[in-house]
View 1 (cartoon, rainbow, N blue to C red):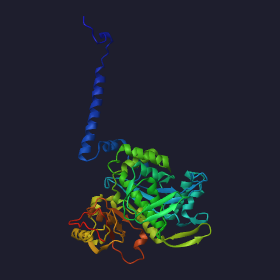
View 2 (cartoon, rainbow, N blue to C red; view 1 turned 90 degrees about the vertical axis):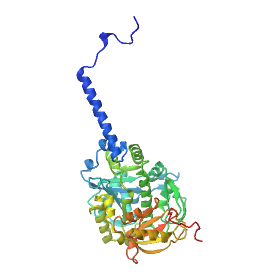
View 3 (cartoon, one colour; view 1 turned 60 degrees about the horizontal axis):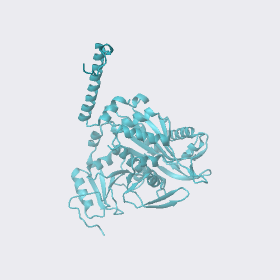
View 4 (cartoon, helix red, strand yellow; view 1 turned 180 degrees about the vertical axis):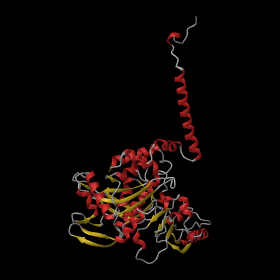
Length: 457
């Protein structure tokens, strides 16, 4: 009798019929689910991981029970001890931002984000009657959480907000580690910088208009630079520029999946103090990953004067009327992006957008070429000329208009993929001679028809 590779008949226990039926049904359900995921990803042009996430991760509305939240974001400053080690005891907030996050809905599938910055030297009277810079609020806390709560309470009171829903406080190396984690960012400096601060460990050397691939340390140094006539308002503008570029890279397809979201949240967890839970953070990150970074609005609270205080020297005094208008626009008004972004852009009348086009590429004729093309698109071109410098690598769209999405409408009409929107401070368009709505500074990334090869001497 040949050897059999089977157990004796008496030891074999076949599954009962009902177990086979249950198993078959379970396999059918799993197969149907996987097929639905694949079909949905093909039809909606989304990755299978993205579709799977929509089934597995709860919407942020389930956590917060509303479509809009307001988050306080702080970046703390620091000093160095005798052993040249950084410490943040008694720190103040070097960065202060109030962020409105509107979650995706059926009417607005991508959601929207708005950021309002508060200059750290802004004058503020605490409930105790003590007058100081607003960034001092953080230093009065007993520990990082208490300090963050004190800072968010002061900023909410200053802005006239009922309260913040959550706070996020970045530790010393947060921005640096995040930028390094995504492989650095490409930045075009808005001014030339030559500054060394050995005590503050800053070595900042950049040429205006050239594109630099900055690592975390370089990007943080660039965004902290304030030694120019513009001072803190331009420092805030550079912070926003770096944040926009970093967020745009994070939202890129190479980083826009569950694995990278989880990795980036881990980077944040190592470097932040926050009352945002892990499930909330993952839910928000997943919900907002489809946002178009060009639609993110940002501005800063303007000021009208400055004065000296005994406690802390020079402070700046807020323009209360402009502050109230910005707070209403950013945190209370119904957002323009409640419409699908494409529809909102279509509603903008191009003929109402006045342009000033400047050639910063160093190549003859490109400003007039672009002006002719944009006139055919329907824009009103008021003036054409040369920029102050002719070594711009990337095209910049400087927005002076307060009308939403004006910069994005212009950006959409440009052929340069590397062009970026640069929102100008509110004060840049107030109290001065009437400017165009948008100034376009053409960089070397423009490839117009019959472009001349010779540079302007």
